[in-house]
Image (cartoon, rainbow, N blue to C red; front, side, top):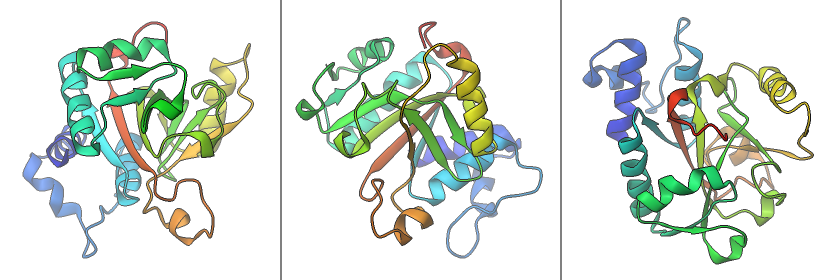
Length: 210
């Protein structure tokens, strides 16, 4: 996974892959730069908080990285409420659970937006089959288009308002890495102990149904 993270940083910055680590401070976190693009800012914030990031530039990379995430998490059965994601999992040789999250210890969904300022990922009941945060498995794979990475929470809400005028979400959830500062400091936070993988895909790779 680390190699893929490095690959993405190098794509955005135009720097060779080995130069990625040069932007780290003494604690190992990436230092944001004034001219960083919004998607790079999100990746830095998200991975600093313990989230796991993967960039996929082709259908083959999606399937390969799904196998890698399954192997790393130790899970082969995934609760996937959105049918348009099923083919990727089936191609990766993974079992898809369509209706009952209790039959799986991991899940996958799309998202509404990824917020650069907070490293949070906005999903809602439209992507979770109406389940509440506490009902979701502790391992969550999120798929997003590059164009869904935005700067602020207000930008994320604007994206939701624009794309879901007919069917508005009733409950919006924000996923974060379990080591995110706000998660660590909160006495109770549904992100505690949650492992989040963020798969960032080029827009053209998404099925039309999404």
